[in-house]
Image (tube, rainbow, N blue to C red; front, side, top):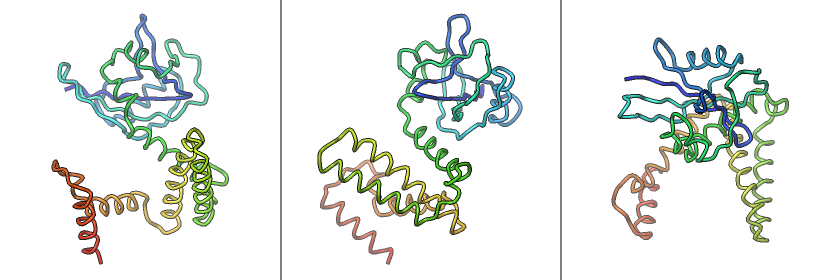
Length: 232
């Protein structure tokens, strides 16, 4: 089986591709000796003349016909891409992606919420580490920001301005994550611990989510209350 590491770098709704003989392809390298991240990093340096950070793994796909396992990694936006032959930015459209050698991965690139969640998590972590005021924010600061965004969201709902509400709800998600990360930093725990705790909590209170059997609203309420009572 061939193991391929693929770097997905997006910016302004465009994705970085390599163009050769009229064909488009994502930056991809066959992993033959070591860590996929290391080999992908080396590939970017040799091919494009730029050092990149290899972000989180956000998707896997096994291609049966070729006996290939594809590993997709997030590449943070490249601020200064040196002039490199074959490198180009193309719009993230299904039509463009279908022109790629890896045409069967369109669904991973366009319809993968995991990728967006991990990108947002990476932005939060970078804000904590690299933003001048992000590194100094306290829980109280983050909570005020979150409450402010919720109030702005409520205001847009009141006037039924769905377009602005769309943006405000995204801000709420970002500020809620930021609050969790700041709490973790100030209380010497890991963000993963916080996420694992809530994952386990909801999974235990709503076990029917992982069952093939559909239940009624009344049954769901009874089960919720029952499993919640077991925690006290």
